[in-house]
Every structure is written in C-alpha cells, then in structure tokens.
Length: 64
Image (cartoon, rainbow, N blue to C red; front, side):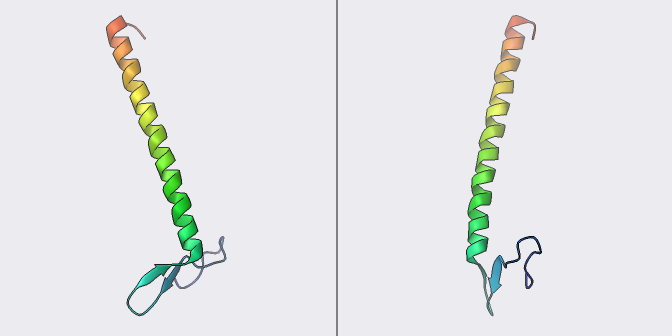
C-alpha cells in the first residue's frame, strides 16, 4: 500500500527493502479489529449454543 486509503487519509503499512511493518495507525486498526472479531465470535458461539439448547428442549418436549 503505497497510497493511504482515502477514507483514512493515512498509511497502515510501511515497507522497507525486505519487510513490511504496520504503522501506528495500522496497529490501532489491527487491535480494534481483533477485539471486534473476538466479540463477534463470542456472540455467534452464544447464539449457536442457545439454538442447540432450544433444539434439545424441543426434542424432549415434542414441541417448540
């Protein structure tokens, strides 16, 4: 990424001869994204477990 993303108006990556580094903005975005994905994963897990429990209840009672 030589040019910054237009919406951000800042670079997320910095490249040297042999490596690519995250800029401070890139590190911030990575941390926020990781937290967001972790929260989404937890929420999906809760939904899935809730659906499984609801299905078991339906099966044992014979109705939902």
